[in-house]
Length: 194
Image (cartoon, rainbow, N blue to C red; front, side, top):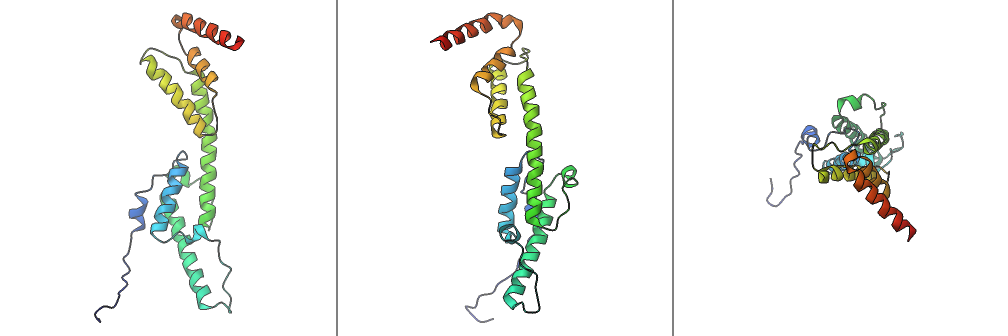
């Protein structure tokens, strides 16, 4: 080897080692999962199929650059699909329709996430409207939990008006908080009249 000449070494990188840094997709974490998948595929230089649409099929007239690009895109697509499949929970993986396109697979995973979001929003709303203070924790913890549920609903696209949240909290209190409930309603009525 001549002094000063550059040598390019191809270091094999384990796809599996990169998947371990990606949170397992569980239908409730699409944003984090997608961000990590795109980052890792970018680091591995395998994100071509997610960035560029599939090239036209090769013909007898295809030049060397077109053949090279086609080969790179096919490799990116194949390995991207494998990478994404390795980062899905097993019970979810079986529900994703088969596709040969990494970009389409990402879209199908996102759709599964949105279905889960709607289901979760319904569950959270049901919890918020039926939750009762049972004295097993402090009032502050109870109110904080209800506020956190409302904040979670907001991230899912369902905004709970502050007045409704206060009413849900008051309705969650047991009968011994009746005087507090009456005082709140009196104050609220007085404020509405002004």
